[in-house]
Image (cartoon, rainbow, N blue to C red):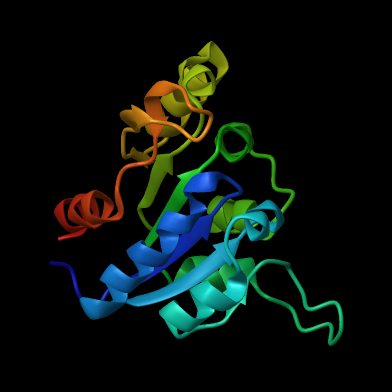
Length: 180
């Protein structure tokens, strides 16, 4: 099991965001440091307080604190990390990553990252199979990003098929294999 690594976890706005609590718990329990960046949409699915409590670090959402003006440096976050895991990686975020759009802290940090970037897609069946999503995943993989394939199973929509984010234990095993 990996330990003593600095893992930056990006959380996007999809129902699978609840699984990030388990990912953090497993990584911290194994002796890793975890910092979390959440997209604004992800707050609809899991709270920053939950992830801050589990990671034992503040959670980052904005480039600055609107009350104090304190800057959350995307460059410092990217340089801190031994690996940048984005889980769940939504179709929206994958498209923006593939095309260099940087309209939130997670995306500006991604564009600044020099460490391995691991993406765990999560979306509905038809979104995952859509040619745009498939092309975006190919673009991201061709640029050195590591993709944890979505699994098959029951989806939040009630459909059954491919698009489900890998389970937290499987994501940690995948990280272990790729970061040793």
